[in-house]
Length: 218
Image (tube, rainbow, N blue to C red):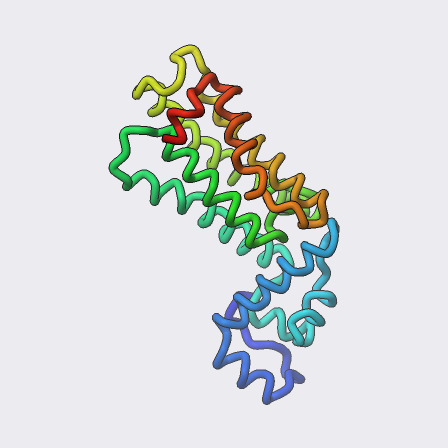
């Protein structure tokens, strides 16, 4: 069944009319409902739970997504776009400091997770996804790390990082710190915002790669 297929014949006529008129909005509503449910626990969301959260029948969900795997695929893409967006935006800045650019990216991304707590579980590749979904998420995280690696290389070219620093290891360290910040957020029951420890997270990164923290903050 595709995302635009019609439901079974016993679908309530009024609900069908509403869904036809609001299909894009309803898809967003469904994704937000999944994120809300993910905040409540580290386990797989069921279609029954999701339908109850959105206020639809389970059959109606299939008018918008082919199943939970399609929903998690959409969430992974949403996360990918918002992780990559600050990287793309920062690349357009006229800045002679790649470290300042990277610090700005970290701040924007941590704020994104603070505003979307449920997505932290997906970024951490926790047990809320199937094996196939987890592999897709892991691949996205690797691609994200490669973007960070490019900034690290540029920082070396600008003399902001020691030439002896391995760009791949530095990028993995950065991603690991981001995941650690989101993990702390999850463990706290989403009460300790990752933005709260932004300065500490950035300091760990700078010390780990031998960067001048004051220069990066200038």
